[in-house]
Amino acid sequence: MKKILIVDDHAIVRQGLKQILKDEFAFVTFGEVGSAAEAVEAVQDGVWDLVILDLFLPGRGGFEVLKEIKHIKPKLQVLVHSMHDEDEFAIRALRNGASAYICKTEPSIEILKAVHKLFAGGKYVSASLAEKLAEDISGDLESPDHETLSNREFSIMLLIAAGKTLTDIGNELSLSPKTVSTYRSRILDKMKFKSNADLIKYVLSHKLNES
Image 1 (cartoon, rainbow, N blue to C red):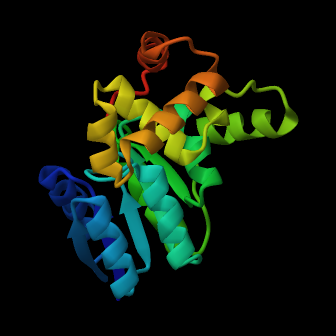
Image 2: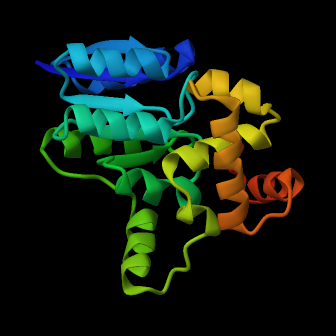
Image 3: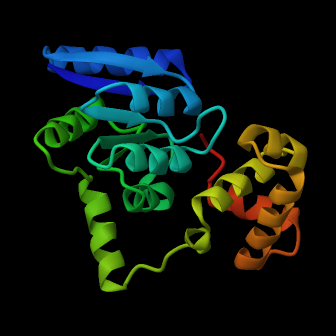
């Protein structure tokens, strides 16, 4: 038997994934959680063959959760399942240890193909993403500016763009407002922004806020 942990804060998404996978893999059992803290706890305490991870979760950024999962269990396969298209998020996910990246708008056959490949011990990327990766390796693909941000900085940028105050962000990420302010300053400096307005404009223009 294989065990899959589904991490998504929408119950309907978790149920949909289970149904799709049950129809294809009769030998699979499932666990499901809806938050970052629950995901980390489940990985620490359980034995899983695959984690299907949404990037936007209550409590922490998905990239940070991905990195922590890979730190706890480096060999555990993680399939990132996100509303974000590949252009902006897939390469960052793969660099942080994901074995596959599937956009939620893709037909269900894509996630089935990915799970088959991961169960066989491989990695899975779509044809379009494979082409982007090849261009990136050859130096022909110019990386977007936000690729210079750390996972924590990237998460905080998205929270600022969502209208959260420094105190709100601190409470959500278990940081002091002063520390969040320091991160904000680093983000503005790295991205060459003058204000939050520039940051919000960038996030909107690159569709980084669509979860």
